[in-house]
Image (cartoon, rainbow, N blue to C red; front, top):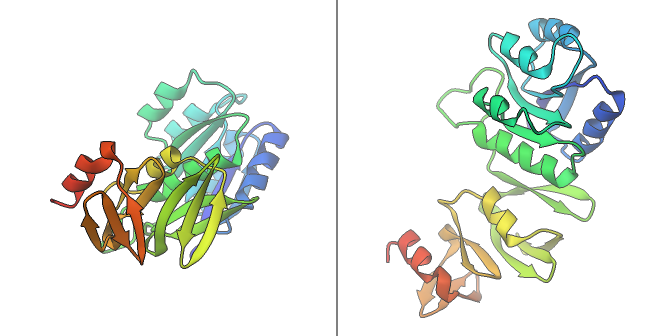
Length: 234
């Protein structure tokens, strides 16, 4: 797997250490530069290839917004800031995400998923950017596990947790189905019940209010029937 080259920019060393710690949970992320001001980061970018930048906004001399505007062909960028009031201007600059400190590992995982979602598979690879990976980052215990979307069987809610059935294994995450469905491609996964999300491609048959897949029969909730019929062209 090709590493994603990351640059960290923040005038607070502790903020850089927090991002570093979070990124250790993502083995495909490689930190290639750490800077506490924009000027040396600009010089580094002129000489080195970077795929993804994590940048603070409020910094002396050149702030994060000015830094991004100064780059002729900027890499993908995720803002990491203590201030919410720059969000509109940040998204006008087409950033990947806008993380407000303190940043949790779960929120970081969502941002990284968004980064992968932006990578468009084409005949040729875009310079400096990897082809989109069909993966879901899921927090299991204290790790982020990268799951191949084609190998997901289904998700089931269980109290305050979600059980992910994956290649015959059972992975337990302190997540919600509402959050999980936001991370999955809507053309390939569907929520069929308040307790279940399934991949459309693995549905073997539907009978009444029951979906059959991989030897399992799962209920279809009343409020989800029409959506399922539309997706299955029934």
